[in-house]
Image (cartoon, rainbow, N blue to C red; front, side, top):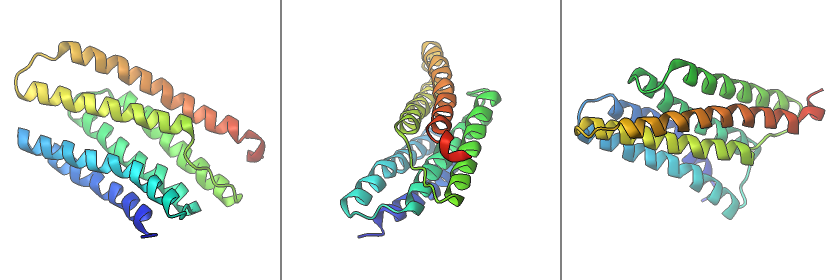
Length: 183
């Protein structure tokens, strides 16, 4: 039972690649399977923390790996959406640079024996990234069945800009929270 949180975290990483496989295979059924797998992966983000607290098995490794698994899942989705011509490359680049920076920052602080677990701003950012990802899935579904989705695309564009701002803000907030311990 005590290994459930870490198993769920690793499962999220594994499912990231499985959902991509189905996303790039043509057909509405494969798209639905992809969304289902992504949803299971997204749920593991909630349940790994839930079980870690329930069984009192929060570990420094888990605090490092959990946000990393989130980054793998969300960035694999956004990179896929770029290759499907749904979002611009600069948006993906902002997400990737922020996440590479944060992972490097976490490693740097870990070497100083300071563990940085996910913050509220980081969780907030991830939550809204999930919303944008589901809106993009909905856009793909609408297009695949011939529904005009211009209005939805405008909502997605605004949501993406909001998430870009959240992404940058959350990275700045992490650094400001630990600025005294950096030096």
